Amino acid sequence: MLKIGNISNFTDEAKLAKYAGLVWNHKQSNDYKSDETGMSKYGNKYLRYYLIQAANSVKNYCPEYKDYYSKKHKESTKHKHKRALVLSARKLVRLIFVLLRDNVLYDPSQYLNSSGGDYQT
Image (cartoon, rainbow, N blue to C red; front, top):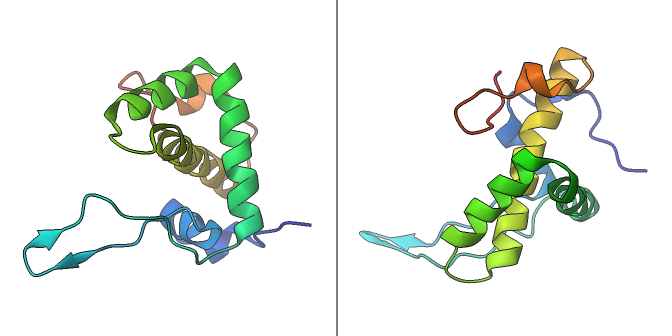
């Protein structure tokens, strides 16, 4: 069984995403910064897998996630589907974090703002 424990163990959604392994490695040296970086292999690989699968399913049924996925797919230069899917999973982690932190059920009208579908915290 996958578990993240108590949500209060994570100070923000970025810490939860890092725990799930939904972060990218940083490749830089002095003024050089690589455009092509792979995902980190740290974190809970099972949680990462299930969050990415959930994001794939959510994008098929939720218009906000479908639009977000399409936007990220167009922005990516390489590995379009994978990158867009992982970024959608990160968006899903933000929602999950807020829902667990506030101990509420999902209500789209409460959590979506009109400026692009990000979640209010």
